[in-house]
Amino acid sequence: MTEQKSEDLKEKVIKLKEMVTYQDGSIVSKMVVYKPSGTITLFAFDAGEGLSEHTAPFDAILNVIDGEADITIAKKEFHLTEGQMIIMPANVPHAVKATQRFKMMLTMIHA
Image 1: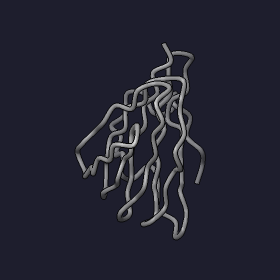
Image 2: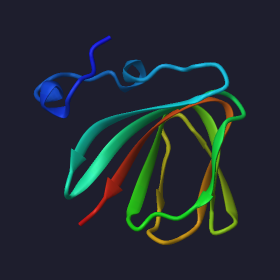
Image 3: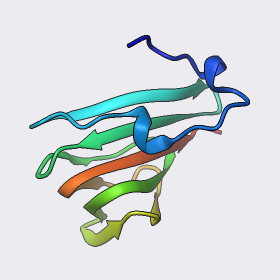
Image 4: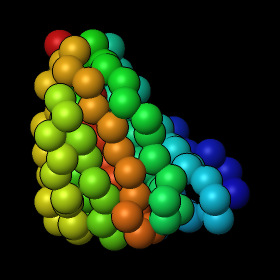
């Protein structure tokens, strides 16, 4: 499969669920947009996989596009399902844990 650049995706209908695939025991990511003002990255998590607690210097918007996950922000847990989103504030500790296979779109606002 050929790597797509964000320029290749302009003026096209995109099926988010199909842009990143699950892999057993892994987390798969695909950067869709990379600009100085922000990024959009798609992730596919196998069940039980996750990102340990960390911080980011920018606000991050997490949109669930498939499955379910537990999101922890400043020690407060949120259970999200397909079609839901949450904003993780800049410089606040957060973590992601797939409770089942889970895909998300992460939008980082740099400006």
